[in-house]
Each structure stands twice: as structure tokens, then as C-alpha cells.
Image 1 (cartoon, helix red, strand yellow):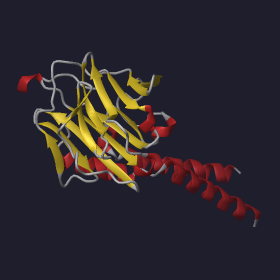
Image 2 (spheres, rainbow, N blue to C red):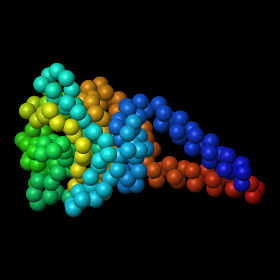
Image 3 (tube, rainbow, N blue to C red):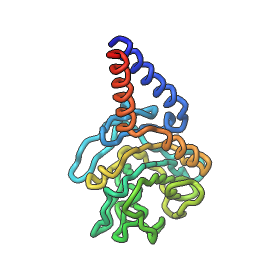
Image 4 (cartoon, rainbow, N blue to C red):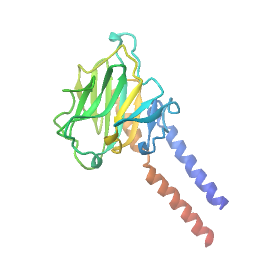
Length: 237
């Protein structure tokens, strides 16, 4: 049994070593490789961020997710990245916010419109920028990154090769202290990462590669259970 435990500890250590190389994930303010657990496992402020329920939203708070930066009209820089299970998203009857980053009365984010496509969100209302005419589909996984900064807002779907832009969707002079996630869409989120910087196209590419290398929790657990079973079988033999 001691050998089995030692082998399992070694496997966990190897997993942690692989995680340590994911620099952009580690530099996020908060990150969830298994959002269903609501336990953050990446990020510089992961231990300070809490998720509570408020009406129809999950509310992330406990740190400042974005502050105005000097120069360039004191615009805020921020990146929110999610891995979505498209089979768990149904086309809403009305525009529904996927996430809404808030600071006082100011808010920005992205939602899903009645065509099943992503649409920008500005001060609690739908904004015309974004892939409004490209439905997300109903199968598979999709990684989205929503980046806001001095150039406006960019929405990346699946890869970093191209992005949708909303040049007018940008904000400043306000601290973002909350991120609201629609409770009805929360089950569709598998991974979630928040950066307090506007990641470049090259960084989005790196981030998506790192996200793809994170094993799904169920896969990792099955792997360890399989290893334990193998060791037990060897011991009995």
C-alpha cells in the first residue's frame, strides 16, 4: 500500500510540475481549471477571490480585477477567457449576459443573443460589436477570450488567428471589482481565467495552448484510479 501511495504522490507531483510551466495561467488574477468546483487553482489572487450567489448570478469578488492605467485616456485593460461546453448552452429568448464585469454603475462583458451568437455588453445593454451573426453551435468545446483595452474590445473564438472587434467598447476611470456570471449559463463553463491586462494576439495564442494542455479533472482522476488499480493488481500477483 505504501508503494501505491508513493506512486500516486509521484503522479500528483508530476502533474503539478507540468502546471508550473503554464506561465500565462499562473499570471492570471484568478483561474479555474474546473469551474464546476468553484475552487480556484491558478492565479496570483486565487485565494482572495470568492464566488457567491446573488439572484440569478454567480458573483466573483475579493480583488480588483482591473484598474485604469496611466496614459491613453486612463483606459482599463482586462482579459476574460472561458472554455464553454456548447451542448449546455441553449439559445435564449432574450439577450443574456455570459459575464458582466462591474465597477460601480459601469459594466462591460459579453452575452448570448437570440441568434445563439456572442454579443458585446456595455452598461447592462447589448452592444453591436462582436460575432453577432455567427452562432456558437450546439456541440463540442469552444474557448473564447474577450480582451478590452485602448484599442477597444476583441473577441477570439477557438483560436488566435482572427478576432471580432468592437472599437468603441472600452472604458476607463473605474475599478472593476466584480464579475457576474449568469447562473443559467454557469454550467456551460468548464474553465475560466481572468487577467488584469489586455493580452496581445500572441499571448492569446499561448494562453489557449496552455489551456488545452490542462487535463480535464475527470480524466486526471481516472488516470490516478487506473494507476492505483494497476499497482494493486501487481501487488496481488
